[in-house]
Image (cartoon, rainbow, N blue to C red):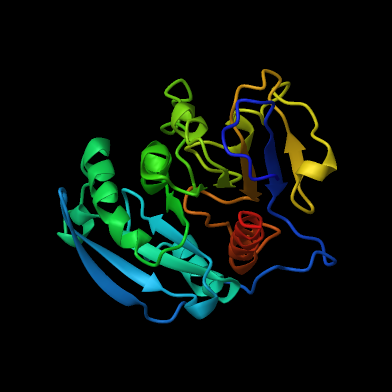
Length: 275
C-alpha cells in the first residue's frame, strides 16, 4: 500500500487472512521471548509512566511505541512477540506502561486520562530522533488512534482494536480508527468479540470493491470503500484468534503460527513506511 496517509482521495483498505501456505516465506521469526529491555521512568500529568526499550541499534529507522490494554500490561503475547522480532528489522520497540498500571491499580481510568498519559510520554518516545509509530493493543490502540494527528505520529498500529463492546455493535468506535489521518494497520483476531474483521468498515458484505494488485502488500486481499471517504488502512486477520489473539487448540493454526502472522505482517508493513 502506498504511504499516502489521509489524502481525501479514493483510498484503500487491505486485508490479509492469518493463514499461510507452505510457499509463503515468513518475513520474521516466530514469537521468541525478547531480551530484557532498558527501563525509563517518565513523569506525565497523569502520573509516573514507564517505557521498556528494545533498541534496534545503529540500524534503527523507526520507533514503534506500544501501549497495553485496560485488562493487562506489556506482558501481552503480541507485544512481547513484536519486541522480540522487530529490532532485527530496524525498528526500535518501546513498550509503554500507563501511569495507572505503574501505580499498581487494577482498573484503567477514563479515556481522556489515558490520552493525557500517552501525550506526556511522547517527548521521550521522540528522543531517538526517528519517526514514531503510535501503537497499542485494545484500549492502547484506541489511545494511539485518538492522538495520532495531534502528536505527529508517522503511522498507527492497532492490535485487537475494540471496534465495539461485546454484543453491542451499535456502539461503534470506528470513528477513532478512521480519523487517524496516517497509514494504519489493524491486526484483528477472527473471533474477536470486540469486533470481527467482517464488521470493520470496508470489509462487510457489499461494503467494498476490489483494489488492483499494485496498491497491495504482497499476498494481501484488498478492498475499497465505495464512497472514497478519505481514509486508508489495512487489516490483517489472525484466523481463529480472540481479543488477545489466542487461538484454540483445535484450530488449524498453532499459537506460535498465529503470533508469526502478527510479526510477519508488521515487519512487512513497517518496511513499506519509509523509502
